[in-house]
Length: 176
Image 1 (cartoon, rainbow, N blue to C red):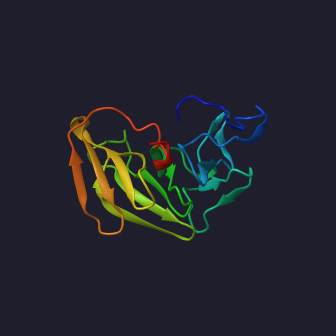
Image 2: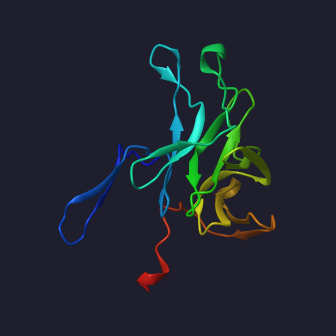
């Protein structure tokens, strides 16, 4: 998502590497990071993701059951794909992503934000690019006109924030 090829967790005292995550599709959170599975190539070097899942800090990957982004050998265009990258909730139970299903170019004004769980998915009432989670129930979404919206996934309520920029991570409350 940000040009990384892997994430490394290093012990601050010894400098030893504790963990390496090779899934770099989303932000790093307490549970790990979101991950794509690329099962097949369309043709040549082109690959499209077919599943979403997580890679935990112990390096183990698990794929969300029931989610199928399509069968690449049988499609000539991107029928269903994630726009802007998937983001894992801090507790590891859900992935939020803007899911694009139409032909042509994805549109930040109409691409719905979808919540994925292990075995299900549900579209939300807002469109935009998911930037990340503030906690396990609040998502930060970049919308048109460079506005930012906070979505409460429990109630569906939204709060618009007149700010520009991108979310790169959430610092633990214990730092301050």
